[in-house]
Image (cartoon, rainbow over all chains, first blue to last red; front, side, top):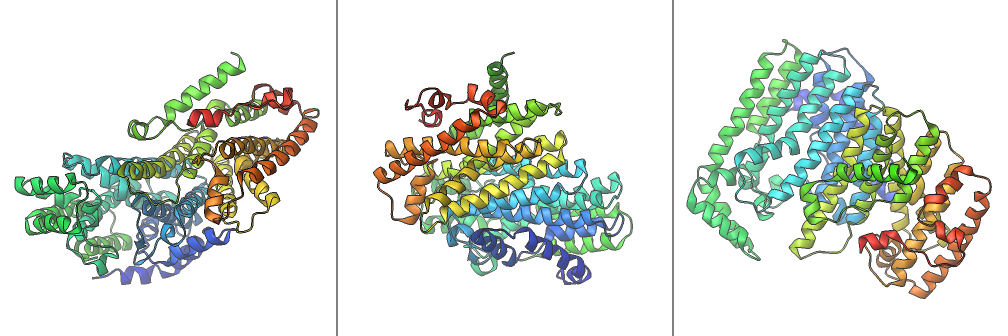
Length: 322
Length: 267
């Protein structure tokens, strides 16, 4: 299972969006230009533009606002990654040096700010205040979510609700509004827009939980970063929270997180404990539940080529391995 | 209400807007440039067609605070967990203030103004990149870049509101203010996170001696000050600004050492 058919179907529109993104990262300053260009050429599945394009097909064809919305969301996603790499002090992203590693933190900050501003600039071209409000609200929520993530680092007392709210803000929200914006920009009904929002939301939740599981079970090659990075950085994700139902594992994780300078071996020990418990399986089940909710929304949408494509995307998320 | 009371009221609302319990626990309250607050207030007041004038002033200040916050993210390698957390929250704080400005503007809603601001932010970041990428320091280039970094938001909004003639004045004033700050930073030998010259020296690994830097700053300071004094005679709006701005004393009493609010607030 892959998204090849959908990429093929959307090829022409995705090419236009790619060109739009390239134009958007153009800058008078060579380093800003190069950093932006390398970021967008580093790959990425372009999930958000795909969601916008598919959602737009419930409305009228070829409204230029649709592509602008797609470009905006991809730029916001890219800008937030550049800043995330400063926060995480990350050297590699998708196997390539990050902006902060290749240049420095300042360059990463200014490149990220430049891209955020570019995104807002393009979005403001869409003369639809509600669409802009949707993006602005999501950006505010995303930044609050990022702050909450730092607040919850090394906090083994956090609960499932905190985790779910955090991944909603971190990932699911941008996917949700990608679906909603496609509908809004193409003039589809508000009711379709809301349904698509929830489809994107449930799918985004499942996607992030899978990401958090893969951080434990994936290889460095598959992940493009060392396995177990989340826990090593103090980020308590769903597998760890589920493993906490076993008091001995919770005590072991707590001991490691409380150490002044825990070694890689210390972490490998608790990561193995989590992997050998039922935590991965239980997390997988929660991810599947979210995906089921996403499928239920699709059952409520008109029988349409995009509904079928969304089903394929949900299938892909359900089985993805990296 | 007097102008000072109005400005104080806006400042209180601004402080309330940027309040975040967790950020507040680890970061100092962001520096609020009261001269920029004054400039934006006078511009919107003079234009008089914006009903939510105070909201607009708050939006502009949020943008400035977001930009200033990210200037504090340094390149040095950190080991201490407290410093690492402070840096992480500095990145996120800037993003949060930035998201707030867009959120408020879209609720007004004013998409034209949104575009103006987004354009100014792009320009400022391009100038910041250019400033720090200077391998061979030419003072005229540096000063131009610094002036644009400090004033691009005000000048862009001034033009949008129909006061293009303010562009040069604001460029000079905020460059002068920046130089006054840099002078204090160099003079006190501090590695203040806001000091652009300090970071520039680190990046170039061939610092000017403080004496040379001070001499150059003083020379340009006097030059810009003279230019502004000439402007004063022809611009009633600038005269109104000067009555309340933080550098007013240097225009009243030549040679007097002025107090730099920014350094005092940042400690």
